[in-house]
Amino acid sequence: MTVSGLPPYDDTNIFARILRGEIPARRVYEDEWALAFHDIAPQAPIHVLVIPKGTYCSFADFSASASEAEITGFIRAVGKVARDLGLEQPGYRLLANMGNDGGQEVPHLHVHLFGGRSLGRMIPAG
Image (cartoon, rainbow, N blue to C red; front, side, top):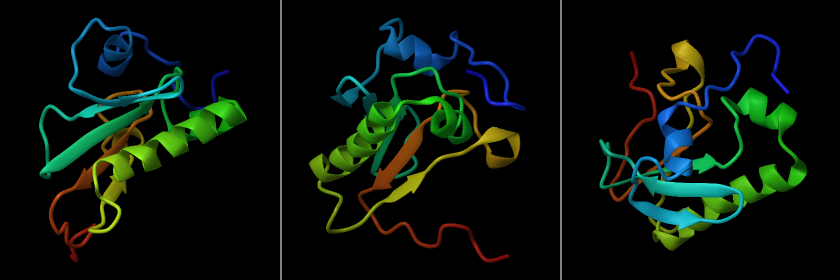
C-alpha cells in the first residue's frame, strides 16, 4: 500500500541493498523485523542506524501500512539496540528524518541512534 502523497518505495536504495546483502554493513543487531548497523559517517562516538525489514519509506508509510507485529518488532529492536550498546543509563538520542524538509537522504524508514557523549541541545537556539 502506498500512502497518498508519498512516492512509491524504491527498492534500489542503499538500505534495501544492505538488507539483501548486496552491500556490506557493520551489523549490530538483526531479527525478523529490523536490522541495525553502524553509520558509515558517524556523527557521535556511537551512531547506529536501525531500519525495518519491510519496504517503508517513512513513518507515515510505516504507521499506515505495517502490521502490528512489524511495528512492535521494530520499536522493540530500537530499544534492544540502545540497551545492548549500554546507552540507557548515560542517555542517547533517536532521530528520524522524513522527507526533503526533514533532511531524509535515504528513502527507507530509518532511525539514527546517537550516544557515547553528551549530545547537547537537539536544535541550536537561533
